Image (cartoon, rainbow, N blue to C red; front, side, top):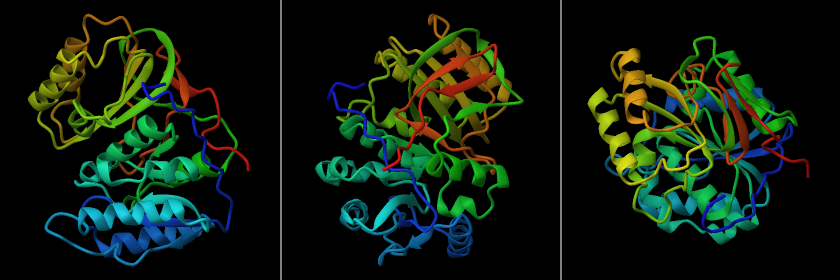
Length: 307
């Protein structure tokens, strides 16, 4: 799995009435969207716990590093909280990685949901603890999420089914079929983990990537840096999601084809995960098979377990 040889930790499946705690690990957020997102979670049947301090602000952060990390640690310790969802991404999760209590997290594995900047936390939980996480909608994005995205979130955290991810707009960059554990998320965040103790080992993994508001040359630069660092050696497969406001989609796919021209792993693009209303929930840390002919990423096991 990763150099720390952690046993994979499958979080307990959520049930109607379970309490979900909210954390704000990165930037402050819009309160109206937050309230609407809370209502969406309650409509799914969950009880929502909003800890004191979530609305704090410090410059471009939702409070100090110690405060934000402390709330995450506290929710993992709290036996009455069955799952955790992030309020928003933005920036700031990276600053918390050295402040988290990974021993407590290992002892209390829980559903943890977020995307974008929260990729840093999902990756750290996987590399340090072996914890399966969920790359999916956050509280503020649930406010405008499609019905399908809300249904996908509920299905990922509260059902026993094996998930499948497909796209009606799938684009094959390199054909093939391969299996590996799914990791990744936001490209900028993954690239900024390079050289840290929290960087994922991508060998034999299927990497998912998405991005927002980055010029094509910046995408090229991040991927090139990771390639030069050897990050993609032994990669099993690559799945590209939404690259919103990142230039022409065709250019993005051509950049990927060029960067990975020497590889032999399948690459499938055109998926909707990322900064879009239809953002589906993708388990991080679960093995899946990527099949470009079927336009499908199919997971081998359910991402949650019955207690």
